[in-house]
Each structure stands twice: as C-alpha cells, then as structure tokens.
Length: 114
Length: 112
Image (cartoon, rainbow over all chains, first blue to last red; front, side, top):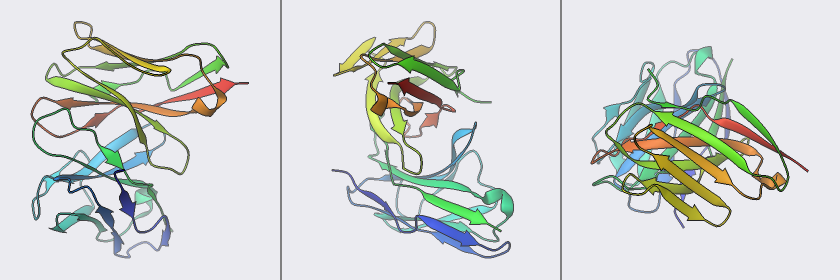
C-alpha cells in the first residue's frame, strides 16, 4: 500500500513563528504536493514538485515555501505564520509521466496559529 | 476561477437508497477524473477513477459516469450505507500534466 506520512498531526504555533511541515512517501513517486483544506473551499494547491529540487507554485503559494532535497521527502515552510494560515494541510504524492495516475494523500496536519 | 465545481455542498440520503454526487468541469484538456472520500480529521482516500476514453466505471457499490460533451461527471453509490457519510471530492487532471484540480466537496449524510 502507498504510504504518505505527515510527521505532525496537530500543531499550535504563534504568529510570526517559522513552521515546518514534513512529509515522506514510500512509493518512489516523482510528484509531491501540498494542499490546504478549508471549509467551503475544498482542496487548494499550495506548491507541487515533479522532481528533486524542482518546485512549482500552485494556486495559493503566498506565505509558503517548499523544499525537496530527496525524492521521498517534501517539506512545507511557513516563513512567518499568520492566523489566516490556520488550516488543515495535506501532503500527497503520485507517479509522474502521462496522466492517469492516482494521487495519494497523507493523514493531514492541523495547524492552529494563535 | 475554479475549473472543477461541485455545486451541492451537502446531500442527505436514506440508507439503502441511491446517492448521486455531481461534478462539473470547464477545462476540455482534462482527461482523467477521480473521486475521493474524506472523513473528518483524516486525509482523502481514493475511491474510483475514470479515463476520458470511457463513459462509465464500476467498482462494487460505486459507479462513476462521465459525460464529456456536458463536461459533467457523477458518482453513484448503491445502496448507500451510514458508513458512506463523509465529504466527497471530485478531481480532474489534464492530459500529460500531473496536476490535480479539486472541487469544493459534497458532504454526504446517509441516514439509518
């Protein structure tokens, strides 16, 4: 089975703190993604990566950065957390190449910024 | 502008009846479509998918229908069970580009 593991399930951080969300997948997937889920807004793509050290902005990249130093690991960084970044963050991965691939999600990380 | 839309935020169905969840898309380059189920405080789990070369795909109680001319897909759950109560997301991916676009979700409540 595909396993996408997010290291922190629940975090509470203060405004202005730097926050790291870590994600590891064990299926040798080329693509990795970070989404956030907010009520009524569905899943919105923050950043994605299709290869090591490669990254592309998604729909809502402002206030976030990412790092992919190894194929299996994709980190989301909040440089200076703000209260409007309180959300559920979902990491996901998929094979690369042509379409027809399924995207697999981790359990999610609930971040509260106070 | 959202390229994948789920216009019904919620749906309530009696146990044993059919649940029909709908999804519309605007981008004609989409050629692969997926449905996910999500329980509170958990990540979405993959349910079923369909390629644009098909108009129907079945997996047990779940069937997905695709109408390309209308840019519309639907998920049918028959018979519905209380354990199906969750939020359902549809997603679409363009040909040869591994990016996934999600709808805003439909919360299904199956009443015993």
